[in-house]
Structure formats: C-alpha cells, structure tokens
Length: 195
Image (cartoon, rainbow, N blue to C red; front, side, top):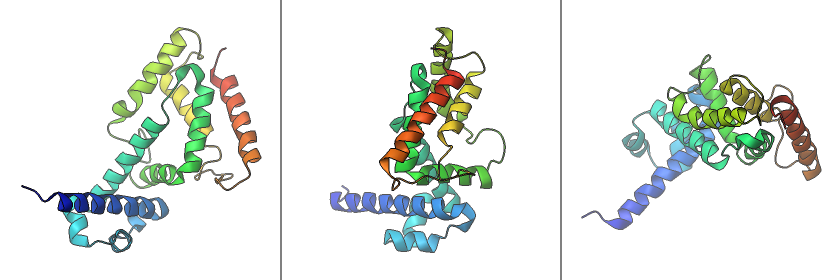
C-alpha cells in the first residue's frame, strides 16, 4: 500500500516543477531554459525532475500541452459570437501572458511553419466544426473555417505579450482595456460575422 502523504507530497512536487518550468520556459524559451533554475524554484532536485519528465524537451511538452488545454477549456469558442470569443482570448492573455509566450517559443524553436502542434486536429476540430456550423446558418462569413479561426485569433493577439507593436499588461487602466475590447469586438464582428 502506498503512503498517502508521500503521494500528496509527490503530487505537490510535480506541480511545483510544472509551475517553475512554465515560468522558466515562458521567459527564456526551450534553449534558454535551465533545469538548475527550475529545480531551485521548485525546491526539488534534478533526479526528481528527470524521474517525472525524462528530460527538458519532455518537460516543455508537458508544460506546453497544459497551456493548450487551459486555453481550450478556459476560453471555449462560441462561433455564433466570434467577436466575444476574441475578447475573451484577449482577457486570457492579460491573465496568463505566459501561455501565449509558450506558444510563441514553440513556434520559434520547434515549428516555424505549418500547424503549431502535431495533434492539431484535436486542438482545432471542435472549433472548426463550430465555425462551419455558424457559416452554414449564416452567422459567419464564407471561407475556410481554419482561416476564419486563424484571423480571429490573430486579431485577439493584437496587444498580446508577443505583439510586434505593443504588449498590453493587466496593470494598465481598466478604461484602456475597455477601449481595446470594444475595438476588437467591432473589428472581428465586421471582419467575420454576417449579422
């Protein structure tokens, strides 16, 4: 029989490693991340990290997979109101700038072209079906559902931590965020919605 307190401690250590690795990878990317900093922040050791994750690449995979799951679950698509979905994505980037930075590092260091993840169908299919359904009933303009989704996501990232123009932060005045949300909502509505 497994000692339950040991299991709880193991789960806590596992989560501390993930949290520390998320911060490290978001700030420095895969190549720049250091296991030494991760284990120091997580208050553990390399042997424990390697026992859980195998190596730095697999640790990044676990962190990145968790970030994708968060975005998919926390910001579910509503294809009948893609403008609202874009605004909710904007808000999530303010809450968790590390998530968008992780995706950017994955793009820069692993997949400079094509889909960001191997299992893109798992990530995209539900969204694409929703957009295609909204197109079928006339809520969303015609076009490849993937391209519509990509456009809305790109618009939602206009002020994200990886913007080429301006990276917003949650510390900015609420009225500034309100103005951006209104502009984003209007632009997405005009670009892809039909009603």
